[in-house]
Image 1 (tube, rainbow, N blue to C red):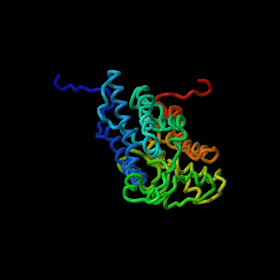
Image 2 (image 1 turned 45 degrees about the vertical axis):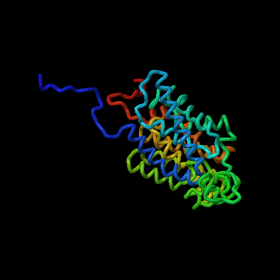
Image 3 (image 1 turned 180 degrees about the horizontal axis):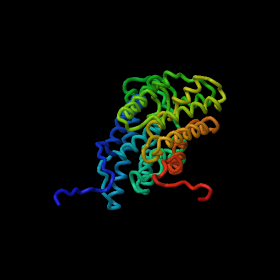
Image 4 (image 1 turned 45 degrees about the horizontal axis):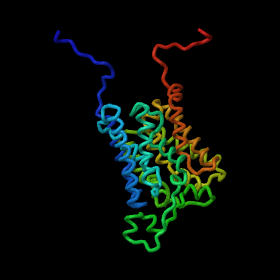
Length: 331
């Protein structure tokens, strides 16, 4: 009898990779964009980040206590949600609105649907869209205060953009108005916009870290960016205009959304083919919102719509069940 083994239920593969380690990697990957956002916009950006992160963490803790559920063991998913939400908001947003967004993301989108792994759309993006619909003038405003005689105190308080007299106009707004953009400044991040979307360089550094850690793959980001670029080339009305095409790709929240939100495990397809189809759908929808629509941005709406289609995409692209025969001629 001592030779018998106690075999538990599948799966039997053990891995050091956990939800906590994945979320920690995402937080680390977002540090460059967060630091650059604070450099660009000053300590007010740090205040917005702290407000959303703390509101997400406290909301999940209070909900678990009230519902008599196990308190979050510290998997950092609430921190990631709060950080992503802050990076998608303008620096001058009222703090109470940022806090409301954090509460909405965790309470409504995540916890009421069963908690981590049960939400049907990205909580941070859902909260951003909720705030954009509820407070459009606050969430879509990127105006920067003018400083007549900037100094070191103004830099610490208001950031490098105000110090250098950069206006609050976003690159996508300039492109929509028929103007050209400075691609180098756009790549580095010395432009107006949301806290975490301005620096493509900082975002790509974080994305490279996630790829190195094998947290994400390139299937969704590449199919998303390439399909969007093709859409802009064909339907943008500018022909092969490198400034317009690259400005659309590098500007706004496309890079942030492609690498950090469209790749969310819970709300993206599980199959390789499904991930490519998902990315192509996001690229087309973002193109429709930006080029055909009246707005200048569309990443948030595109990803949320894509999240709703994920079950169907998984069903269509899923592998055939072993041993299951196909129906042919009614037999």
